[in-house]
Structure formats: C-alpha cells, structure tokens
Image (cartoon, helix red, strand yellow):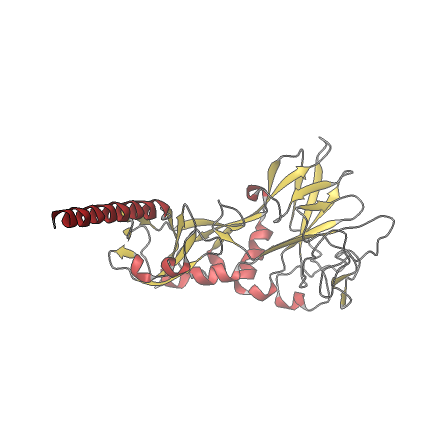
Length: 349
C-alpha cells in the first residue's frame, strides 16, 4: 500500500511539474503588448511583439479601459500583431488606463489634440494594406507595348517617359477611426526611398493627381491583362489616355471637384508639387498644400482616390524608387497624415 501511495505521489508531482512547465512555456509564447496608441476619440491601436490569434485578439473580455470607457469592437490587423480597439468617445488629454490579462499593472494612454498616422507597409507604420503602385514602362523603340510593372520591387521614372503611379487607400482606416471631417487633415506627406540615381546633379520629379481608376499589373515583362493599367490606356483596351502615357493636356481640371473625374482628363493638368532628387540610398518627402488638399478631398470623396502620378520633369538619368513589393519593408512608400483627433462638429458643441 505504501508503495502504491509513493508511486501515486510521484505521478502527481510529475504532472504538477509538467503542467508548470507547460504554463511557463505558454506564458513565454504569449505575445506581449509593446505599444498602445490612441488614434482618435473612438480608436486605439495596440501593437504586440508577436502574432495573435483572432479568437483571442478580438475577444472584448480581454480588454479594460478606465475610467468610464467601453470597448465596443476589436479587430485584428492583417499583419497579425496589431489590434484596433473601437471605444466609446475618449476625452482629449485625459489619462486612461488600459489593462490586459497578461498586463497586470496596465498602461496609461492619453489622446492628444493633434496626431499623426502613416499608411503603407512595414513594422513602423500605423496601417498596412490597401496601397497600389506600378510603373508604366516606356521603351523608346516600342512606345505602344502594353506592359506595366505592378509586381516589381521598384518604381521608375526616366527621360524616355516612364512614369509611376502610387495610391494609398484611406477609406477603411479613416472610417474606422471616426475621422470623417476633411478639415481635420492638417498636413499630408508622401515618402519615397530612392534606390538608384546615377548622378549627383539634381533631378526634378513632379507629381500630378490621377483622375481615372487604374489597376496595377502583375509583372514587368508580361503583357497587361484586361483592366490593367498600360501605356495606352487607364483600363486596358477600354479607356485610352488622352495622350500616352497618362499625360495631362487640358487646363482647369485639377481634381478638386467631382466633375473633374468625368473621364475628360486622365491626370490633373496642375502640378501639385516637385522634389529635387540628389543621390540614392535615402528617403525623399513629397509634400505641398495641394497634396494636403487632395487628401482632404479623398476623405470626403473616397471613391475618387486614385493617387498620384510621378514623372521626371528635369533630368537626364533614370531614377529608381522602392515599391510596395520591396523586400525591406522599411523602404516601401508611405503616406503620413497629421490631423486633429477631435471631430469639428463635436468641438463646436
């Protein structure tokens, strides 16, 4: 009998130790919260150091905010390590404490009156997905080739006429965050990384707003399929450019009004800005009041957000930028928006 009890005791000790080691391992494998960023009066983004399971990440019972704030919705980002919490309205500059099951002490969060978010891809950005970019490749010997380079890791503009398009989908993010007033947008900046520019002489790149819908291609040397952007048309075989490749011709159409998007023009006649490129291996920021106005327009009219065309205005060498397919995520194109976190109508009440 004594031998039996000793054996049973040994088994219980073994199972206890096994359970302890499994629990420790599970705790070690559980992603830890590394940042909690209030984005608006009704949205907080959480960042973890590893991928989460949707069942756990979207369980409202796993989050608490005090004082007097309720979690209404939780959405796991496609990257797997970010969660967007939708809440009842938070007060500007009021201290709140967020607690999670594996964060016993909680973390303090405060919503500032002015905030900044970044769209694009990569670990440092606030929102991922929804972006498009592609190059319209122009061969000086065969200017009618129906190719574009939407699946390439680079974007190109050069003296032969090659241009590239870039667009960031703001609609879902701004809608989720509760940012619906165009006046809340204070400044917008597109950041592009130059991979190659084989001269120290400044080369000027311009950007114009695109006024027609387009679809990026799947490669650099394959023929464009139906509804893909080409040298000849915005939508392959269906919507020819006024002047290939997507060159603006008519003055007075600049993309500020819905009537500008009626197909009478491909790209805005107005140049929204320029930037001097001098050297490779660094980022260049494209920003202007007209670019900020474009973002304000897209907040109010998300269906007309077709992004920008970038072209070489003055220069004699090709400039190669990194695209959203770049292997290094930190080199991909981004759009940064500085904005007011409080809706104007609420401010006036």
